[in-house]
Amino acid sequence: MSRYLDMVDSPEHVKKLTLEQQKQLAEEIRHELIVKLAKNGGHLGPNLGVVELTIALHNVFSTPKDKFVWDVSHQSYVHKILTGRKNRFHTIRTTDGLNGFSLRTESEHDCFGAGHAGTALSAALGMCAARDQRGTDEHVVCIFGDAALTNGVSFEALNNIAHTTKKFIAILNDNEWSIAKNVGAINNYLNKLIRHPRYNQLQKDFGTWSSGCPRASSPSRSATRPRKAIKGAVTEVALGGKPARWMPTAAAVSAAA
Ligand SMILES: Cc1ncc(C[n+]2csc(CCOP(=O)(O)OP(=O)(O)O)c2C)c(N)n1
Image (cartoon, rainbow, N blue to C red; front, side, top):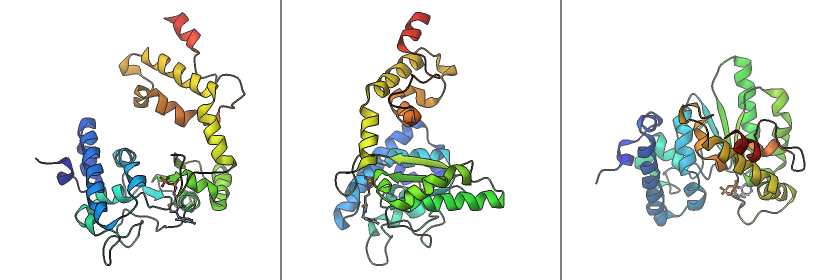
């Protein structure tokens, strides 16, 4: 049976697929990862966890013009598969084979060679600063795991984003796990945030509110997945603060209905 994976070898091919076809592609990539990594080993779990994310990124952005900066970059296998390295994927982590991390000499789609945890935010910020000075318009997307937040360099970057650039895209891929279970204050904060009743109420309210929107005027495509959408949007809401003003309460929604 033919696979979408056999037809996809570049981000341009990904963009041509429908959403349903991309879902099927995700399944095929997951299978490919399991089969190929069974031979030489490698970072299976982190890559299984970013299959949809990587497809979505290639759907929205266009490397090599846009830059993806993967923290550690042990989770860049799917990106490699989608950027012309599919046929050599079975060589990953072998002598003369594909590198297990991002490597600039391996592909124009790899803008940053990594391996160490915690460097991506800082590197991405540097790229944004250079872009702004050049006056070009490419996007720089930093994808970092919760392990990045155990590194001082990450905090240096976070501290400087707002006064360095107006355009910085960061995706926190928080699976509550690094090499081992996370410890520390930041990890506690993130866990507290997603378990907080107000946060969970906001998710529910957003779901109720967005399900009442006509499809065409839905605030965004992500509104069809309210739980996920709100998780990304709500981190600025103070845990003990007032309800966010942009969010109608469940009571207001049912009163209006
Ligand atoms: C400075 C440094 N310390 C330790 C490691 C070993 N290491 C490889 S992957 C990883 C954790 C990655 O966790 P996270 O970024 O949260 O991504 P996940 O694998 O959970 O998706 C670590 C600590 C490293 N690469 N660099």
